[in-house]
Length: 85
Image (cartoon, rainbow, N blue to C red; front, side):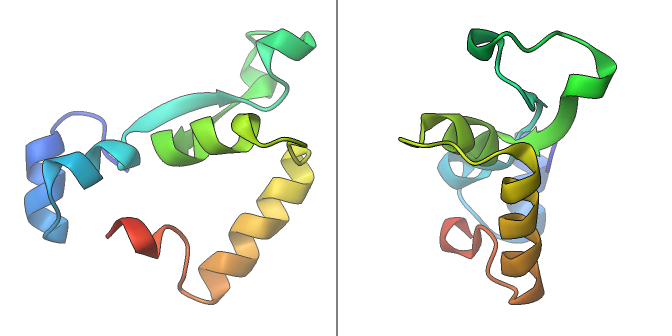
């Protein structure tokens, strides 16, 4: 993920700026505001823009724990967000 320079990130990973935007570091609410989630340190984690938007846009969003397991499984396979690179 990147915070400061999308250009530097894109060059480092050899991707376009359009693809690099998905890897921007964002703060994701584990329990969404719309579901009553607070803006507290315990409820906010770092997540790329792609994941932040994707989890909550699902028809039946997985719980934070379920989503964490999904991410971990994909990371172990080397496949997390590989379609964006």
